[in-house]
Length: 134
Ligand SMILES: [Zn+2]
Image (cartoon, rainbow, N blue to C red):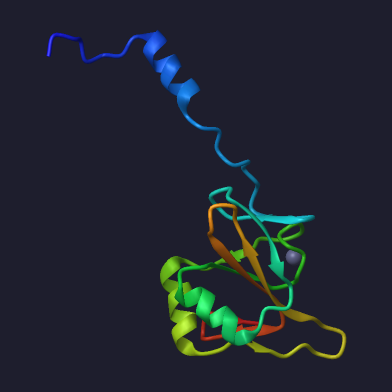
């Protein structure tokens, strides 16, 4: 090879321009009609009435799982993001248990990114395995 390994500025610029635009980055948490995960991936709502069985299936299949204890979507407090291992473990532990108190709330939501990632949001008074203890 006779070419120098180092790229010229023009080559680098051409490469950057050729890179397809990435999906819009979204900050972590719930923002109106979308969610963002810790990496900034954007998710759109599939259903806000996800069944407990479907939540298990999604988590088993590799979904990102977030526990939003107070239900504010991260606007008022820190969200509890499960690691991949933790998400797989709660899936093995069985179905989430929703037990809203009289004035409380509990729900499971399914959100999906344009490139097919799944996000499961467990909000409020939900227990799931020994990791989510609302
Ligand atoms: Zn909150």
